[in-house]
Image (tube, rainbow, N blue to C red; front, side):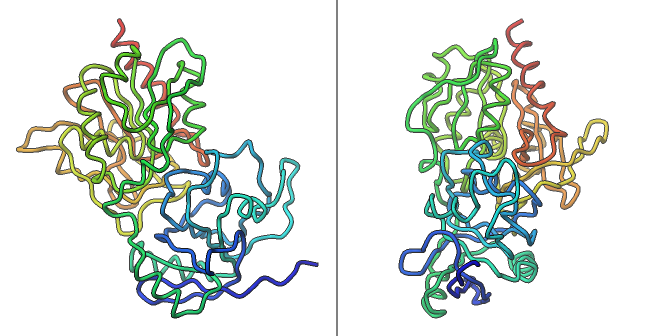
Amino acid sequence: MTAARPAALLVLADGEVFEGEAVGASAPGGVATGEVVFNTVLSGYQEVITDPSYAGQVIAFTYPHIGNYGVTAADDEAARPWCRGVVVRDLPPRPSSWRAEGSLEEFLVRHGIPGISGVDTRRLTRHVREAGAMGCAFGTADEATLARAAAEEPGTTGLDLVSGVTTPARYECGGGGRRVVAYDFGVKQTMLECLGRLATVTVVPAGTPADEALALEPDGVFLSNGPGDPAALGTQAGIVSELLGRVPVFGICLGHQLLATALGGRTYKLPFGHHGGNHPVRRTSGGVVEITSQNHNYAVAEDSLRPAGRPVAEVTHVNLNDGVVEGIRATAVAAFGVQYHPEAGPGPHDARYLFDRFVALMDAARA
């Protein structure tokens, strides 16, 4: 018989209140805060929770049954979760899977991540879709305390969250015949596994100067995913600018946004972002539709890629739900990027061909 969980509240910055029960780690003083976003995956919750791109955010899962197959170290995308908390409708007390090495709640406790279950996540999702992503506070503290904390939560706008998640030192992985330098803005393990099949990968901290990366004589440079506002990463955008034209470049998610910025483009914040494993994306060449895994709050402004009518990049992929730019290719240098996650951890594998395109770009540069 499972012990009763303590009552808890989730309060949004606009005053909306949701009832639930405290799960996971105990929040200090009964209060946990962050920017609330919703994710629509039906499975892959462990990969989502351990994605460093969620630094500063509280993840609300729209699927009602989260934790049913437990957790296993094989599904970790990083050494630990970077999110601020987890919101679910139902958190099963016992997992049911031959792969399970423990329960999701045990995982949250072990990593110090607070959560709240029993929340009406349908109402929460509808509210966030209408009002936009915003600060929140949840826990066992009283409503007034949580409301103050939610109102004071700054969210992610204007913040450099990459410096908190990037590797402190250079390291190598993979064993393919090419050499790739991967900038770690919050890189996921599945990305490194995909790259590692194609190249020997040297992962470097986010602030590594361009000349230092080029001194490693890479065949290509990879720009990873990561958290926060790309507009706050002027140093990283400057590094990418120095790399362009000197080595082939491939960017994913935040890496795609920094590539666009380095080319002269502009980014903006979406109302509630794209977080899930079922976003339809159309290739502008040929019209093929891919089902993609996505996790981002910011996007590239299409008009900014054509300053004074001269395109610095062409749009290669478009989101069919809302028309957001999902992929670009530079017009004057060997560089491309996509907003979604072709490594798909979790998610469909429709877009893994993009790693082969990176190989083709590197091989063409070597020829």
